[in-house]
Image: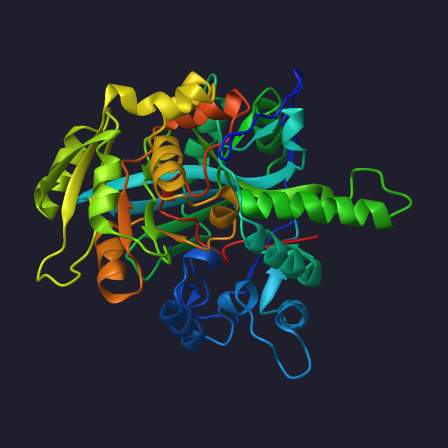
Length: 445
C-alpha cells in the first residue's frame, strides 16, 4: 500500500479564470506605520513572534490570522467581529476600483539581493481533478479544520495563496514592468529587512491583457495547499446553502499571488524533519538499519553541509542524533546506495516520484526504518518541520526530539513534473522563500 503517493485524474481541458477585485488595505491616514500591522503567514509565526506582533500595534493582522478568544466569543468569532470593526471604523478600507495588485519582494540570500515579482488577483476555485490548479504536496488535517472555521467567521481571504504559472511570451511581464517603473502605493521593510512593494493595476485594458494571458495556463500551488483546500470546502458549504448558486458568488474565488516559473527570484528551500516520541529508540540499531540502504559516513556539521551542497543532484541526506551523553552531537552523511530504491521499486511507484529526495526519505527512513505511519505523519504525532538547519539542530539539543533529518531543496522542474503527472509529494516538501507578507491586501467574500 502506498502511504505517501497518490494520483489525481485530471481533465484534459483546462482554463485558469482570474479577475481583479476591490482589495481591502490598511488606511494610511489611520495607520501611520504600515510595518507595524503586517506579519508573515500564520503557520510560520512562533509564540514569541506572535507576541511581538501583537505588541507592535492594536491593529496588527496577527489579531485576525492567529486570534484569541474574547469574553464569551471564541477565537474565530473574535476575529470576525474585529475585522468588521476595523472596516466600520475605516482602519481598513476597500478600494473603489477593481484592481490586480503587483507585488514585489526584495530579499537577501548569501549577501546577494534578489527580486521576485508577481501579481495578486482572484482565481476561480476548481477541484484539483479539473486540472486547472495543480497541487504538489499532501496536506495535514488540523490546519484545514482551523482555517475553515476562521474563513467562515471572517468571510474573507486574509492572505494570498502562492501560485506559479508558465509564461509563454511576455504579455504579463510587460505589464508588470510598466507599473513597477513607477512609485509603489505601498513600500515597506519588514522585521527581517526584506522589502515589500505594491502597485495597483486598475486600467481595464491592462487587466484584460493579464486575464486573457492566463486563460491557457495551469496554476501550480507553491505555498498554501491547506488554505486552498479550505477555500474549496468553504465554497462547497456555501453553494449547498445557496439555492440560487450561480458560480459567480465571491466564495467561488480565492485571493492568489501568481509568479512566473522563470522569475529569477524564485527560491525554494528544503524543510528538514524533526523526529520525536519514538518508543525504545536506539541509535546503534537505527544506524545499522540505515546502512542497508545508505552509505553512512560519520562527519561534522561543517563538512556535512558542504557535502550536501556539493551533491545537490544526488540522493544525499544529513542526519543529526544530538549530544546525548557526549559533549558533541553526532553528524552523518547518508548517500543512497543503488539498491536503496528497492522499497520504492517493489511498490511500483512512478519514476518521477522515485527521483524526489523527500519521497525517498519518507518511504525508506520514516516509514520503513522508523515505522512511522502515514496517519501519524498526517497528524504530526512524531514529526515536525523546520526550514533552517541551525534551528533544527537547536531544537534537538534543547527540546524533546531524537533525530534531525536534513534534505536538499526540491527543484522547480521536479515540482512541475510531479504536479502535471497528478502526483503529490509528502507534506512540507518545499519551502518557498521568502513568505508572502500578510496584511497588504484582504479579499472580503
